[in-house]
Length: 305
Image (cartoon, rainbow, N blue to C red):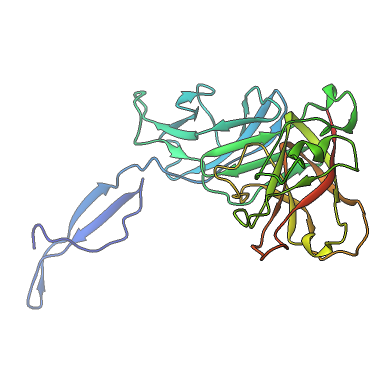
């Protein structure tokens, strides 16, 4: 019947020939051919970006749904990176160390130069991946975060947390957060003991992004080893969006406790090294008095810079 909608899996970019054969009873008429071309679709499959070369390029991968019909521009924040990109080709781009590039999208373009539909975002990758021992690339949604130290500019390595700015939950008495990075093992940070902060935390701001290789923690034990429990050490490149939310930090160390009644350094090697600005130590479990209290004699962070 004319105008009838017929369910059919219509493929894109395909010439199709349908035959309509009139019939009445056992008598059939002459078949009538109907040729049609299904619409071109600007979508792509397998879109990804990888193989970063410092200060030079990266590679973009994609498979056009309709090969040869559209051209594609790669956009960064709405601006075209090169004039046109090909599938599985290197894109010239000044990849900078320890820099976040956001909103990479692929824009299909019609033969007349107009945009063919909306730009296609870089697909979601929920896990980070190491490119090599000294480069770290994290992709999430349409964001590509590139943490790549310029190794030709690495001058030295050593402890970098001494006397750096420290933020933390409120402290007890004169046992301030800065005591944790003053180089004196006889002073210490002591978190609030009112119960208002049952999961205390402390963050060291290294003031710039460095390649962290190791973190050392010296908890104060005294006669309260039960307090040295549920501790995590994490690395990040921004402050937590809300207090006690360290879900975006990468955990590089843990002290589950309780520990022996002795003063002891806990060392956590970061392998492969991570580019980070902030180093945090925090408790992950709410405890009753006085187990929730956190006391730190000293923290040290070793890095290449």
